[in-house]
Image 1 (cartoon, rainbow, N blue to C red):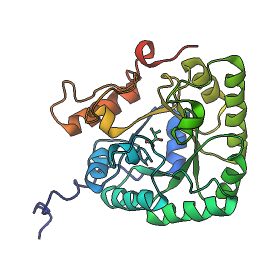
Image 2: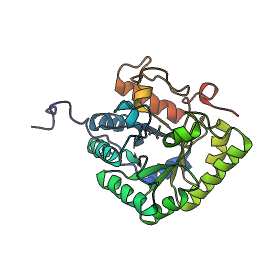
Image 3: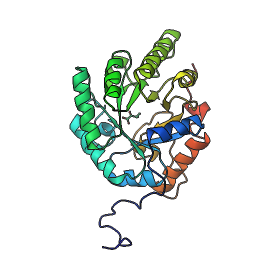
Image 4: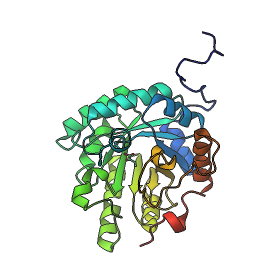
Length: 284
Ligand code: KIV
């Protein structure tokens, strides 16, 4: 088969021209005020398309339990599931930065369990692992960072705690809850977390945390003043059936193709046109 022969069953898209993203380059983008565009990815074909469309970071989120497996929460997702999808994404990707979720039950027991689980995902192709929660996770983050594993923390609405939080609700609305989130963010920063997802928190609070956090903040339903944005791919492509969160925009609306929709997402994140603060921000 020559280079110009299409691979059977689609295959991966042609390699993107850009250089592989590193943590160093992502930090430089943040320092230069360039917004970082992240989307979830679970398979090789979409990873190749997202990468070729300019998405900076691919997240193998445990949202795969809902969008790929049809569960009503992320709780049934196992480490083996995430490792499998991470390996698929890594095969399709050329240059985007790959972040994989530690699923529920894979890090709650001990530092040792968290390290073992993170090693599994890094060996599957992740370049950074993400874990949910603050306070009790700080020693885990420190241990992972000390062992050379880049960490993305996740605060606000943490879907693995959906039952404890009483549903998919906005977090950090009152002064005390906001102060706790700020404290947790500062502790995670001091422990070495290089990235922080802020989910469903008021825009003002996300802006405050982003101003103090030394790494990169990525918002989802957290307004536009974070250093980057993330959406679940199936939500922004309008593949998800039923009601979607208020902050989701359907990028297929007016797009000529999936690749066009993804390019529009990247363009709008970079320009600040997404999210729309009035519709997507949650001002306390
Ligand atoms: O699992 C996931 O996809 C996530 C994002 C929504 C942030 O954690």
